[in-house]
Image (tube, rainbow, N blue to C red):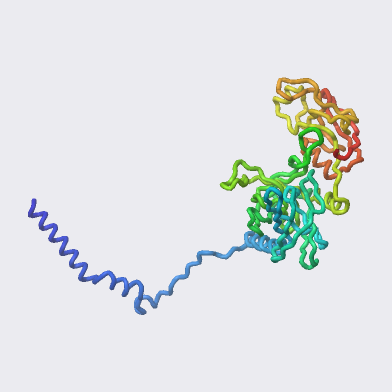
Length: 392
């Protein structure tokens, strides 16, 4: 057994020595055959060329060109806003509205500002004056004094013509990263947010309607910047995000749900803000429940599935004057009072929820206008004419 093992070892050593003699040292094999190929060995075969980045063609190429062209045209009109307040300061975005020097942004960007700096992509930096604010929709107008040649006003689109699924882009300054562009779609239309203005004596806030929802990435610092369609037209002003957490520095984390003020509201409000310094919104004077589920419908004794349920009416408001009823009787659900009217139509247009009602009012009505509401009362349909007033 030992003899056979010794023979096996000897044979293995002989094989290794034979191979070593035939190949030569490893460094010679590398230098002669791999790193320095001879002409006779490789001249007949051309060196292959690897194309790791194939050219972009077709629809993708067209989208690339659209987006890059859009950014080049629009970015000169997007500004970076820095404010100094008694508590520190804030960062935000805005865009040029006209050649006179008006800049549009959010009210919450400049709220309490002692000074406002407006930085342009060209490198121009100017101090601006806040000339008008609107807490109901969260808008503000800043005025800068400069040569009109330094100003690039952005075109305004039509938010009512937008469709869910339509591509949009946001340009702004998230976390102070100036000139950032992100891409997404219109996720929904007609959302409702609370405004930043309180209802006098109630502790609550007025509603801001006709809000666009988008998944284009927007973060702190995007506030006040434009949301644009692929034509480069502003269709919304980025205002807020839904968030489920914060970063290490305490900033809100984007969850893929952002909100923008629709540009059609801006087109109604901004000229009035510039001319008068304020805008009067139409006022109905109700506290609604936006959507009812089946359990709530059963508790209220309501059979009609859609509409805005009137939980309360404001004392002395337009709804009370027109005879609209709020809830009066406690149901099995805490805080839910039965006996209120269910608004199912406005001027002949169906109302599926309160979002429909407030969006229609803000876009198409003014204080002093009349509006015909179709309501369900005790499961019977009737019409009530209301004269709208201005918000107190």
